[in-house]
Image 1 (spheres, rainbow, N blue to C red):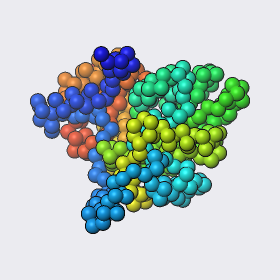
Image 2 (cartoon, one colour):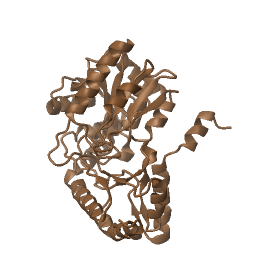
Image 3 (tube, rainbow, N blue to C red):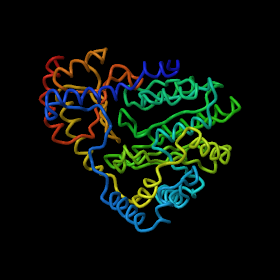
Image 4 (cartoon, rainbow, N blue to C red):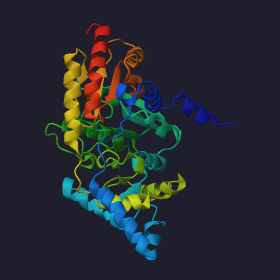
Length: 400
């Protein structure tokens, strides 16, 4: 018999993954070229040549030397290779004016692994984790893994910046963490510096009132994917109790390699205990350490640019085409998602209508914000072009 916790997890399993599987089934039935799958944030750009070259060179060195092979494929500190962590610290310092060294960085099994080891380190049962809707739905499960409660803050529906009045009202003596994700999945919105300053001010005030630390957990897989002259930001500068989780899944198109890192700044309260806890959590959750080969390979690619132009071209085509058809969309400032208002209150009805034209969209309620759908435009430009007649039929069905 499976556990009650897993039964709950199965009942709330990812709508995104379910739709991805459905898309594969539809492609087999109708032909892949006739199915327009906007469900999954799976990058359509290849990993950089430098990454593949690094993997090949590392493997070559391992075949030529037993000592290299043993080091490359063996255990290391649960935090990862010190030289890889130092390379990441140096890169962040160069780009964002931070002051990290290797001990501030822990290599992780992607951003998901990073968030889970942070949560294991800071959360007790019944603690509260605040999220800003709409949010990545897996946050529900990550909090539930440690018997914590997710508390949702509503957005400003005009610009999808968080409603900060609602935010302040939701902080209680059980609040232990607040998650931000900017550029945001699913809206593509970037939280403005003014928003971040206000979030920081509220947290500083509430820490004093409550009498314990509240950690701001910045989930940053889309950090490099920004448009229209927007600047990449690094959020430890706004609030000292900020912990950063990062993944190379989007920036280097490596989602299947499961490689990322966590940063704990020296200024964070109990920084050394946090780092020790995160390191041991890497082990006790069963990750042990991030994949060794991937650590070494990404360290060679920290200066590699993300192919923002590819996604920007897709962004413009999809946003401009759908708004011309009468759909109401939030113009993405970053990431690779389009957030579209459903023409009817029940967006699940709208998602079902889209399937009649082989359009796969993800319901907004999966992100804690009903009445909208998400389209992942990390697909080929040609697929977006082919999908437009189907969107036109869908728009006509709703008299747009």
